[in-house]
Length: 284
Ligand code: 13P
Image (tube, rainbow, N blue to C red; front, side):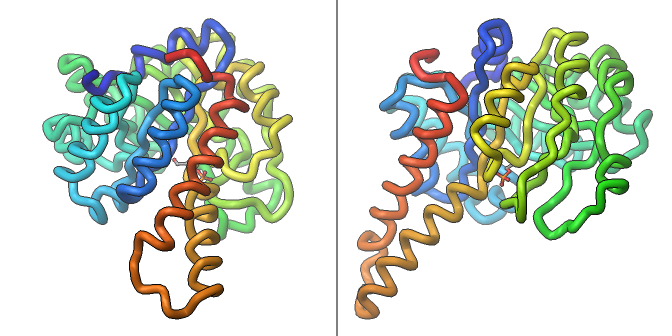
């Protein structure tokens, strides 16, 4: 099967109240672990690729790996640019074979974000490629944000609705209190914002910063209208912990397969648990 647009599975996820996972691909072992887990559970999924990961892997290898996974598995898989920063990088990815792109204009003014996102949607739609937009600022793990600042960054439902109506994105990431990376405590997720936006627009809300969010909060987010959830850090931690364990046990190891095999196994377990939690098993 060829790579597909997120529209092959997101409308069904929203209608049936489950979420499809975006698992970030950082190297070959991540890609293999993610597709192996999804094959075991017969689930659609999204390979998220950040600009940093793209630089690390190279665009040709990234597309070739994702295409191989789609061919091998027969699953509906979208290859999605994560937090694309410009029209140019989105077009470069589409030309190279990406089936989906995110344009993150959240650091621009509201009007400019709409204008730039619309340009990406127009071009991407003509090529059958899905688009994710972003509104509000999603914090990072190093941002020790106080409650006031956090509120200042949250998406406003009326703006999110207008953003959807004007841009026609296929899914919408809104800042609702999650952050990229692991949390020091628990995230303060604003389920009311998710619900208000999700009720008013036909496409799913996207939850970024899915790592470390307690299971109950994930279930509540999905019930409120989240249809796509991004996970990266938990796989990175599982991968590195497994490698560290092998190397700590035996300092003489030099064959990368000796530590990458357990690393890949550990990521399979993370991805399987997320797919089960998100409810996308047997939805391929
Ligand atoms: P985590 O790294 O917190 O899982 O977030 C991933 C993400 O949102 C990628 O866009």
